[in-house]
Amino acid sequence: MLSDIEIAQNAEMYPIGKIAAELSIAEEDIEYYGHYKAKLSEQLFQKLDSKPNGKLILVTAINPTPAGEGKTTVSVGLADALHQIGKKTVLALREPSLGPVFGIKGGAAGGGYAQVVPMEDINLHFTGDMHAITSANNLLCAMLDNHMQQGNVLRIDQRRVMLKRVLDMNDRALRNIVIGLGGKVDGIPRSDSFQITVASEVMAILCLASDLADLKERLGKILVAYDLDGNPVYAKDLGANGAMTALLKDALKPNLVQTLEHTPALIHGGPFANIAHGCNSIRATKLALKLGDYCVTEAGFGSDLGAEKFFDIKCRYGGLKPDCVVLVATVRALKYNGGVAKADLNNENLEALEKGIPNLLKHVSNIKNVYKLPCVVAINAFPTDTKAELDFVEAKCKELGVNVALSEVWAKGGEGGIKLAEEVIRLVEEPNDFSYAYELEGSIEDKLNQIVQKVYGGKKVVLTANAQKQAKQLSDLGFENAPICMAKTQYSLTDDATKLGAPTDFDVTVRNLKISAGAGFIVALTGDIMTMPGLPKVPAAERIDVDAEGKITGLF
Image 1 (tube, rainbow, N blue to C red):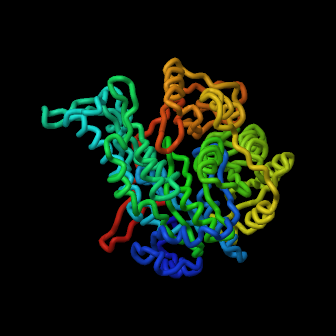
Image 2: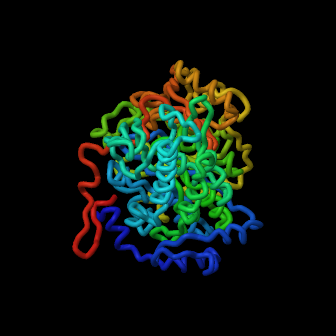
Image 3: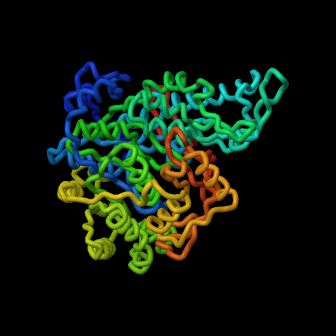
């Protein structure tokens, strides 16, 4: 059996100009990055402005498990299936981050015969967007520390610096550091810490910005610190946002690549707020909606995190209205939620499936009843799935009025997703009453409670004394009506990663609230969520290699 990277390396790619031509993109709007990658111009947005939008299809999933769910694989396969049956389709995905590529995941470009290519490039430096974000963020950090060194006219309180340096690599040694050591000429000593690049506010701003002017304005609103009187200090006060925008000018342009079956794919932007929520940028999603009749996009993690942010933050800021949702699950993952050890997931176990399926049903209910969108469950097929297990899942979903489609795209590419595609085509024509989980007006605690109660199925939110103080401060600063970006474990509907299935009798504790003023949301930190992960005991990097001819192995 060929590995993912071997399948990708054996694929015949079309020159990217041919992919662009299929979307009627003029040569003048293509900025080539080699033969198989390109950025699309700012002028293209203006040319397509009056064109009606296509249908917006979101792919999300149940809570992730070690067994894997395959959201990206299903997203790619669904786009290929729609393309196969003659629908003008554009795929819109996030860019992978280098940290997970070399850490646990080993790559994030789909799998099997449902991948985006060139796979190695996408998983590595791609077109340099992540590096630009890293540089822009760290320029702001350098200007902040330099300001304090050069007289500190703004009277910045070095004990209340909110800004963190970033690196697009997992490195636990950078979580808590001291900078400015060495003497007077080496800066002001203070404690600092690094985040992974994709957890930065600059990443979120790139994803949420509507155009270059909006990008510059949002960058200027980044809260960098407080002064000695407790007043906020923003990036614009340091005069940094112009130079940051210059670094990000090209990164703002969406990247065009293709799938193994030559379906156009826009890969741009990425996770924000905590480790990963896998949302594509607003600009790329909007462009995909103009270029195709169908846009397939993805939200990371389970729908309680990724999809919730997609709906309540991204759709709100982008004025987007989804037409249907594909909820990905595997029989294996449902059995894991029912208490089966990872080693035993290949064995038929209807009892465990019955215990684990409430997790899927909760996510289905959220899509249908909270966000009021049509939904189809895509079962990402494994050879070990038995007919009895698949029939059980289908029967339970039908009780909620939701159809189930078997997805075999990993093994068969687009052909394995045609049943799913046909159900999606049917669903997008259904009227829907898309709603948010909460309205922006109201207290921060009230909005948190609505997320916990409606989306997670819990009793209430509990704010620590510190979080209560921060909520009051943010309200006093005028941020009360900002949307909420929850930073919570992806493995459970609760803030405890060990609580599987669909618990009901639980509270969610918020220990920290901070404003991402440029991005335009409040980040609520729960549990032990970290914004700078470490590498595992055996990182994926150990398996990645390159031979004398430049052929890469080990990415998957």
